[in-house]
Length: 328
Image 1: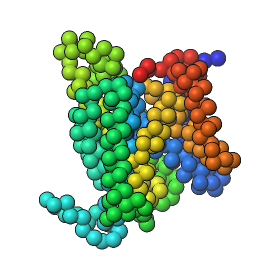
Image 2: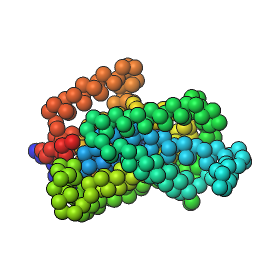
Image 3: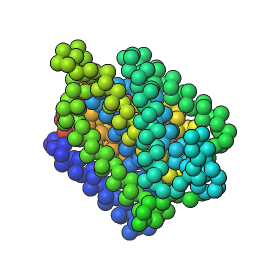
Image 4: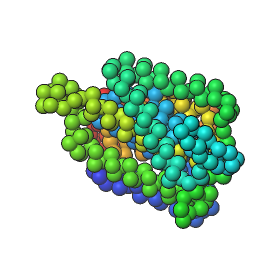
C-alpha cells in the first residue's frame, strides 16, 4: 500500500510534535535534545535542498554558511557575556544575547558570503562546481582554525543560551518549540518557492538552461538568487545549532558536515518537501542508537545509503509513495 505524500508529510509533523511531548511527560530531556538536533540539521538541509533538489546544484561547501551562522552567534554572545566591545571598524557593538537579532545577523552574513561565492562558483558546473564549493569550505575551515581570538582550533564556549522574548530557552522543550516553528516556516517558504514561477524557472534551468534563455530569463541570476536564499537558511540553522550546543568550533565548516547535509537529503528524497526532515531524523537516530553499539556506525549508514541509491531513487519518501524524486 502506497502512502499519499501529503498524508506522509502530516505524519512527520505530527511525530515531531508528539515525540517531544512524550519526552516531557516521561521526563526524558535528552530525547528532546536529540529531536532538536534533528530539526536543526533538517533546517540546514532544507536550505541545501533548495539548490540541490530544485536547481540541481551539488554544493560540497554548504557548511560555510552553517559555520558563519554559528560563529555569528558565538562572537555576538561572547562579547555580550564578557562585556567587551566588538570593533567592526565603522562601528562597535557590545554583542547581544537576543536570538532574533543573532538570527538576522547570521542570515545577512551568510547571504552576503553566498552571493560572492555564488558569483564565482556558478560560472562552473558539474564536478567543477562541486570542487570550487569544496575549496571555499576548506578556506573558511582553516581560517577558523587560525582565528585565535575566538578559540582557534579549540572553539569557543558560550556559558548561557541566548534569549527569546517570553521564553526560557534553557528549558529544552521551549527551545525545541522555537526550532520547530522556524523549520515549519522555512518548509512553508520552500513549498511556495517550489510552486512559484521562480521555482519552476529554476527547475527548468536545471534541465535545459538554453530553453530558459530563449524565453528571456537568465539562468545565472536564477541560480544565484537560489544560492543566496539557500545560504541564508543554512546560516540560520548554524546559529541555532551553536545555541543548542552553546559552543562553536571550526568543525562547523568541515567538508564532512557538507557531505552529511547531502546524505540527509538523499535519504529522505531529493527535491521532496519533507525529504531533509525524514533524512535528519533517520541520521540522528542511527547516530544515537548505533553509536552506542559501535564507533563504526557509519558503516551501517553507508550500507543504508547504498541501498537507497540502488533501490529507492526517490529516497524513503519515494519508497513509501511510489514516486521518484528529482534527478540531479
